[in-house]
Image 1 (cartoon, one colour):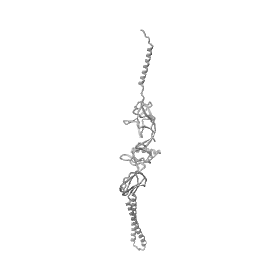
Image 2 (tube, rainbow, N blue to C red; image 1 turned 180 degrees about the vertical axis):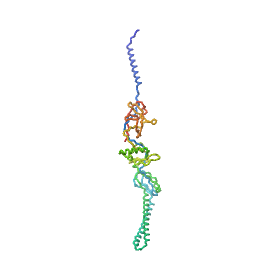
Image 3 (cartoon, one colour; image 1 turned 180 degrees about the horizontal axis):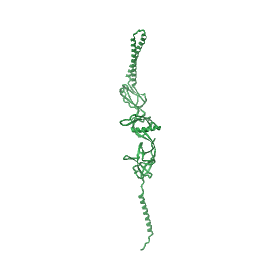
Image 4 (tube, rainbow, N blue to C red; image 1 turned 90 degrees about the vertical axis):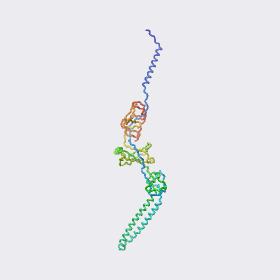
Length: 386
């Protein structure tokens, strides 16, 4: 068998072909084994921090004092000396009722008093004149006794006339309606010229807006827990229940700048609702708070030195079970069941399921499927104020 010689050009061609085939195979293998990068998710590293547990309760804002001004005498309303909504002080003149009939009545009462006093003076003179005549039997004893009795009767008439003068003076004073307290007066209920009736016609309402109070109700269980915490605070030498500060959450979600104090606790539980009514007083220097505004009272009832807090948006619920997506050291997602405690604003207190220092997903939960590798973008943990 004759062996043909191999040309050098063939050897070069074979080497090049082998090189290209090897390179292509390596590229194909690399393309098959490469893993695409995971999705970006926003994570937060949770850390233990002090926290105050609170309870938000719907409250009703009312004026600290609110008085209806009613006419105490009847007559035509002659004058109104204020502008609706203005600030008034105690004793300020607000309304004037026609005083002419009452001035006449006072004059008549004074005349009657003067007449009664004159009659009393005359009878007393008779008593003084008859008294020295008794030892000599110059006048009958019966005449003297009758005169003394007449003097006592006239004294009673004088006292009655004095009372009539006082009553007439009061009626005259009541024609000038004054503010019983300092505060803000509302819109008048009647117009000038209206005939008002004593004890019936409401003229206006004066309200004290600084301080202002908020009424709210708590359940019996919440009250018992609150009192237990209060007793422990008292034993620790801390503030009493009536002195603990509470916050007011306004309708727009903002916290009112002034702290309040619980100044009243109803002594009885409502048997129908099983709730207890409390009242908190807040200073209101700028009259920002008005009666009837929507609000929530935030009552703090406990303190935790090392609390694990997670945002509400980081928690998912399935069939009554709560879960948090945890990012492990290998940047893989894990769906972790947790037990939640009370809510603190927009944060949840985690009682079990997480440990200090773990990373949880706060945005992009749909991307971070269990077992999937992700690219974590770390953000700061929100802090809760004490």
